[in-house]
Length: 232
Length: 84
Image 1 (tube, each protein chain N blue to C red):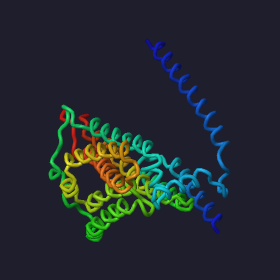
Image 2: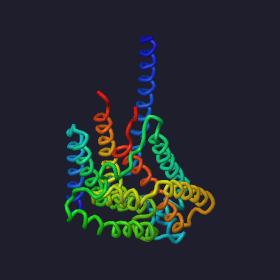
Image 3: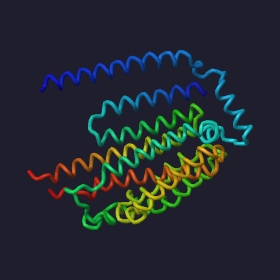
Image 4: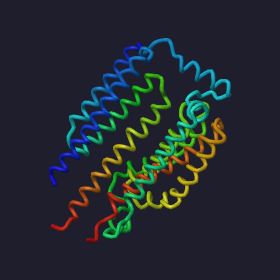
């Protein structure tokens, strides 16, 4: 029995070693073929900038993400959807567990400094506004759907810093964000496959999708850390 | 001037990365990790990659440390509530 387990372990190690060696070889070859660091020659950059100017997009990074390489971005988006889905499924309530009401633990307004609470409430609208700006202005300036979506997804958690978990729980109803995540991901698939290059709508859809995904993942982690307990 | 800035950003990132590895307590490590994320953001800005820097700041300084701290909190709570 244990001999069999050892054999499997050795096989697994050999497989891993083969993969690591192969990766090291290919990676070294790739690095040796790169342009030197900090040089003046940027063949890929020059071509990307030319192509993005041809299509009328001032922010070349957005153009690469949502026009020239929209298919790659589609893969990245689906990875994010898959991981958010996995978190929601893995951290769902199982039969031996139950969820407490947030009020039971005094996760309502807690004993935090007044100054911290006021700063938190004041920063919430500012942070959300910055997130919307980064999404909406992404085709012109640094930023875009992903960056703005991450800002939006983390912005609501300023409420937790003010010590008010119940307020956070009210401001982000999980089913709404599950629906938003699915609709935005589907919309992005359609846009990326059929309408690549529509930078503004793609930024908006990615912003919604990324924001929903981050809020969902953090909501599940918060539930596990604060509310879920085993009933035996 | 530019080269000195770059060297400083690289040195800061290397320093904080080492600090992350040398910090053994997971909660403290999450805080140091947040600082390391910030230094990577600074490095990306000095390398003229503001798009990546933005994503790095949000994910590396907020998202990942928060997830680590919440996971540690959940584990401690479940250990405490386990019947003896």
